[in-house]
Image (cartoon, rainbow, N blue to C red; front, side):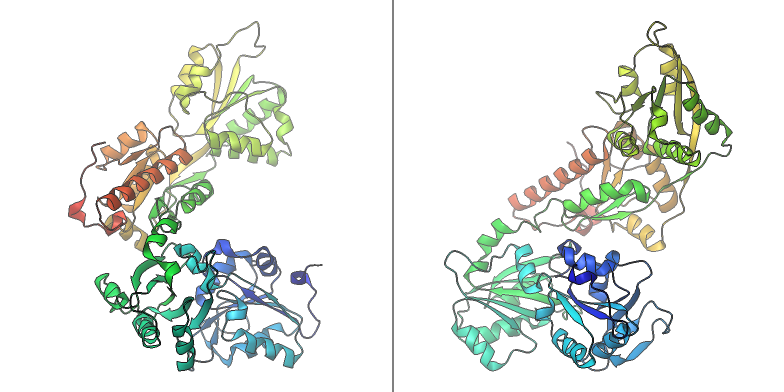
Length: 561
């Protein structure tokens, strides 16, 4: 039995001290995910809560730690749970809250940033568990002091095997600074942005040369990560010139790496994370949540921050009788073909099947056609492999190019079932009739304009807060402009095909990116390629790499290629 699934004691419960890593949710270990799935109570600092909460049960009680009156003792605020009023600070310290949460045999996960072994308070809370007779376990995590340099492209050791020292600038004594200053090894300093200069001064005073290379990374392992390269003697000026300091955000935690291993030339070659093609870009994805999931995952792999805004809501047809007759006709052998032109059409037919207790076996003897990779994948997930997918353009026209004409010798039935949206064009119906087929053109679902997004999102769209927007159909263009307004001129406009691009231009938008073929994944690839070329051009010109939203509105030029 895994330690994370051990039964809790009837009286004392069980506590798991869990390392949530430095910020990237993908760095959670498998053990951590398992422990979170079994938790009755989750205790975490606000910055850690977003990383771990998605892996916990929906009914988990969440205790969100917040700064208390004492800088040395974290206090807790109850976010969920019926026993305490939400938002009211608890009077007990963290250890007592953890103990209280474990009573009654509950499984408690105490999540901390990085690794519990390097957390300032975790050991005290473990000792409190021992004193109270509460069993506990430790699930290690990726230490912030190790994970952040890795994401910044700063190796801590090489073949020469230099020493690595870890220092917390908040608690380091004079003796500590003297020891690391006298060493020639790599020093990893946990500090705050506004204390970096003082830490550099301590190291120089202790014997390190002012020209010793160093890097400073803020928001490490997240898409807000930013790294500056300098030396101990120039770091204060570097941060000032970058307009990072002085700043009201000076208290933000940073990881500083000092030593020859953090030389700027080496980091330029090894900075794999911040050099992703869309690193830090806020990309608007105007699709339904279900449709946007795989696209958003792909954008994240390029370093982007996808923001999903549904522009279309899918609803059942107003009169379901036509759809019901058609589905029954599938079973009774009325059709030779069924053609799916969208994932929503697959979903609509599948839901009717489930309503009648049918499954994929009902498609036996029926030829199935599908337009687009996503539609074909949805059918395969249903247990149906389409016989016909367009070999060329993934559209109704592309499907017609490959569709065989009706032949009474080889085709015992001359009828096609076409489940689709209420606003679909007549291109496919007319083409099939021209090929000699009878078509049952059935409204399987209705598409209606979604509700407007929150005011904050609308302002970001119109004010240039997004770096790019992906339009996957003409209707997404019309509906987004209708419910949220026209994207700002600095926003990169990416369209899935010529028809969508034409609609975007009709709405006064300049199209920057077009997919080489009508596929949402090829559209994301095209945007990533655009970002890569944009980054390369900036570096070649010696300019800083910026996101489109960071440019002045008047500086944007019309693309000519």
